Amino acid sequence: MDIIKNYKAALQELYDHVGFREDWVVLPIDDRTDMFWRINDNEDKVVYFFELEYLPIKDGDEADRGGNFYSDEIYKQRFYTEHVYRGKDYTMIMVDTHTDGNRFFAFYDNKKEVIGDSIQNIETTEKFWDCECEHNYIHPKTTKDCKLCKAKQEDSIISEVIKQGFKI
Image (cartoon, rainbow, N blue to C red; front, top):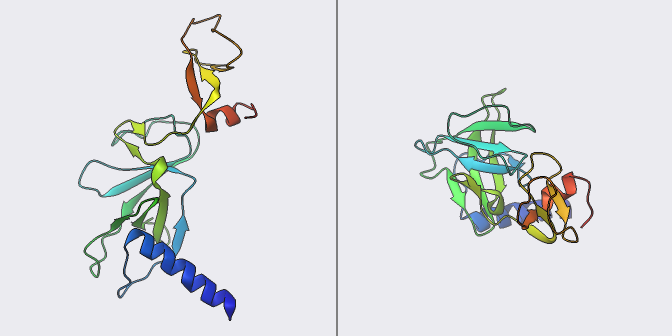
């Protein structure tokens, strides 16, 4: 059946991308490529993943950030010597949700990885800029300055522009 063959080929392509080789245990795939993510700095035991890219995250800091915020333990399976597999575009992490026995091969987009307090490869637009105001901080480039804070023009993050209702 072509559907099964296509599925197996796509799955193998994902595994090849991150350098994973199947062994005794194979987990279902969880696509988290739309989430921003970070592995904690304390012995790589937890992966945090969240919706809002502009909110830095620090280990042990689970304050209300707005949006959805999650964490999973990195699953250490005895048949594998590695549990985090990094490819050029994606990273696969073996995770244990500690919910109903669910364990996954979670895939994350490398462009959305937070290292330290910053996101790697943030996509910005030259059509809008941010000021220093807490609210209404996105301005079209046709507006030269902010009447409230007088901030200089810095390109806006595309996802923030869209969330604020502007069209790019």
